[in-house]
Picture: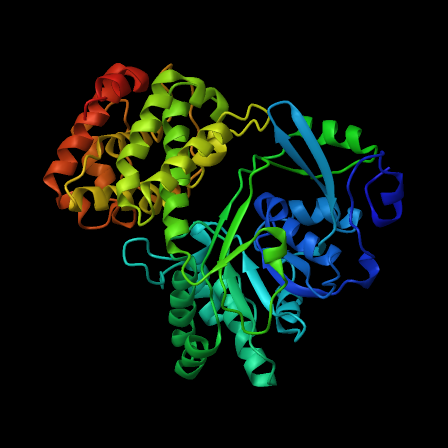
Length: 489
């Protein structure tokens, strides 16, 4: 039987499930981007809130692209299982905080109606870096983005998150409804400020007064989210369903560790998330930098180097002594760029090693490598710039950039295909054939990607020389041998 409200009582003994009447809860949050991360992170914290009796904070989810999550969860009344895995141990819990999932492209009006409902007081987002239509060089709105162009011409039938938000804000303002809070949960530096900027710039292209209203009345607190959430496989589905005693078409996986830090600025109240371990602060930036530079930066490095070396999973890669040494040296370079005590940063990296070594997660390097061109600027290039500005060593960070470039060449060090999942390379007509082009020409071509490297790094002769040397070593020696020869940089 399928997991549903009516079959919950038939779960196998010992499986945690919602400790509240789902028929009595009401939505207070709309979430854009209802993927695995949201369902293993924010939705769990809201599930805790509902169990405490905060019954008007349930979630209405929406996908801005695909229908897979909706199709899996609709027959299950929005229920799904969360499997927390830790090197051989598994703990299952059924989450009930998501009341339903819509697919925005099928019927934009439905999502707009949800967003304009006065009961909705918070809109959260996990739409990945590319969903914000941000020019990664300037930090402003990409006005030429196809979805932005469409939404300006068709405000009542939007495609983008910005289009939906601005149209909903305009309608709520017209109707006299109180403003909602828009909370980004994506790995963008200063994600709240970035979101506020692009929202305001988008609105200004429609209506200057609306832009001023958003600037003054719509809070966009920054946040930092952290939990490793691997993609669910068919093997996971079968195993979790067997453990539940009920079929779950799309369970999610996660590690025991979970962190959520939020700036405490909300227009119309919020759930008592601090009782679920969420930390509220006046300034999220130190937490954000620590996570982006120490976790996300090394995750991207592990993905690039690990894939070239033939490692499919993070736990495999970090068990390789050469890669582990590279990551340790990467942290030594990145920690001095942080505005937090060194001992706290060092303790965080010890914790990260244990998380990376979790063999039960099966966290694929290919999953981390997706959309890498969108992630590189904030995860690796930002601390690299700080290192160079302060005259600090940055060899491992340069090596990570070179490994990423090499990983875009279509094959690993053994010649096996290395697929790319990155929209940058669908539109880039100048991508060099790394099998037949000299290393210097490859680097020159990639440095022409101003959306990734900006205008400053291609003019930094020292950086360019080091990048060419690192890439040449990887291309001629293989990534692991190159990492060892690069150790003194």
